[in-house]
Amino acid sequence: MKKIELLAPAGDLERLKIAAMYGADAIFIGGKRFSLRSRASNFDIASIKEGVDFAKTYNAHVHVTINMLPHDSDLDGLKTYIKQLEDAGVTAVICASLHIALQVLSLNTSMEVHLSTQQSTLNKAAVEFYEEMGIKRVVLGRELSLDQVVNITEAANVDIEAFIHGGMCSNFSGRCTMSNYMTFRDANRGGCAQSCRWSYEISANDEIISDENTLYSQSSKDLMSAEYIEGLIKGNIRSLKIEGRMKSLYYIATVVRGYRHLIDEIYEKGSLSEASLAQHISEITRAENRPVAGGFYGSAPSEHEHIYRVHAERVSHDFLGRVLEVKDNHILLEVRNRFEKGDTLEFFGPDKDVLKQTFTEAFDAKTEEKITVCNKPMQHVWIKTDLPLQAHYFMRKGD
Image (cartoon, rainbow, N blue to C red; front, side):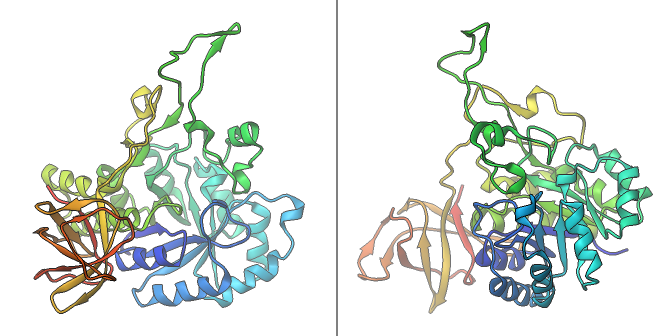
């Protein structure tokens, strides 16, 4: 049986490289055209080619989203763009529009066609319909229980992909028009303003009935499905997808690494103890700045899986720095958040081990000034260490 795929997001070339290094089997990205997440950096053809070549060194593949729902004016140059993606070595394209999917198929490229979650695929009949079209993989909607996902997969003759982590829509995936109504930014053409996360007053009969000190929000908690991964693996789902092309380097490294080790341990041992699962969840959620829940996998979400009347985003200062270079028992660190003498520093890379040391002093890379408090974001400092660290390791707060 082929091992399940871990599919990670990347908003630019740097994040693609981190995703590959930290254990993703495939990375999905957006191009400059025909893609949602227009606020992500996104890739031109040259950077897509570079990303494909880099991913290959880690035995990883690159999938490119062509997942906007286009108007006529959006379609100019589509066939040329599809051929450019093939020439760049892209493994698969992710389509939401059936017209775009059929265009890719008609060109007989080497690329697989995957159907986006924007189509809200929630049943066996729909999967069978797309199979008859020639679709290779269907990305299911998030609004399914684990049992429903497994049942659809058992009946399917195409690969099934399911989301396991990241943001959740407050509406059915691909069916929300709140952003269009509130801001004239089309969510299905790459412009979602995440209006569900705003704060609102509630009125009835022209009278405000909400608490003026705690305004109303209506977004969902983010998805974190670590406890369901074993069931998804045993259910023969082909790919597990992490949402978040606009997320940071630290987030990508943390979440991809966490799920990589969780998946590998399930394959190694067959199942996880409660203690082991708890440890994996602790690692996976170190980069979160919003509450998380299991989505629909266990049961239909209740009010406890939604965020009402609170501002859910919280600023995290957990990410302290990134190792840029290792030289003569010293690391060159790019500072991200404050740390000072006496703090415990934790370093992690793609491997499972987390390495620790107590901070005593650093030296500014430009001025060579000795410092015991690092509090300037993006400052480069040298720190002495005997730990076996490598470039692209990350540093976070220790216990």
